[in-house]
Image (cartoon, rainbow, N blue to C red; front, side):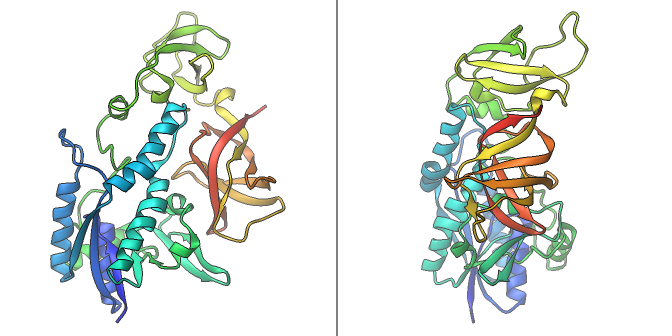
Length: 360
């Protein structure tokens, strides 16, 4: 009997992943990983999640291992997160967490426990292809998580199972309820794992110093003062504390750009202002989950999670990076985030957004 170790998070998705594998005849064990140190202000839910994972393992009759990868997470994910924010960029730590922790150190830990495969509760599908495993979107388009998985190495995907990728979220909850799993109605976790439900800028303020500077319009008019470029992201509306201005329309203000040289935050009025729109972007080196392309080709691209596919043309560059030209200008394309490339249902890979070209 083949052994699969499931990353049990204490949520319903990983619980049903374990249930599915057990029903398919696998020898199933659970692995609960702690990736963040407990905090004193109650936002970290690791202790509660572990108790839920224990209850699921007990109901399924499977062993549960517990391990802390907090040191690895801080070194490989969180330090990068802080470094990018200091540079005025907006990183996505969930992508690095998948590559470095869940499908990195956790997968290797599972192998040391005798697992032939490591399984997760991700909403994505792994399809066998001529060149190895292919990463495809989940059947439930509203829950698809392939965006967060594009940076995982194909050799790691070859040792991975994603049992709920063919299920709708409603089916997952129904199967959990029918099986008597105590987490069948547990709310989904939201936001970045180590921040939890706490205010984002409050959390960043514990690690990054404030560097106040001017808030300006695109034509240089001073409107106020910001706390530091690290605390804002492109397209942001809330928290600017600008208010109305005499002689200007009553429209909300949005962050359109950052000028690190002058430590200035550039804002505009209206969510479709031209300074918020980008016609193209350039990535860093692309991570391919398929044969690397040498010639330009038509594709679909997401520049943020839950975004609908956007038609584009990808132009490979000599250094392994890419220029992506959109069929329609995109709003608030943000350096530090990821551009993830698709061909139909298949995820081809992606790269970090390094720069953008404004729409004409």
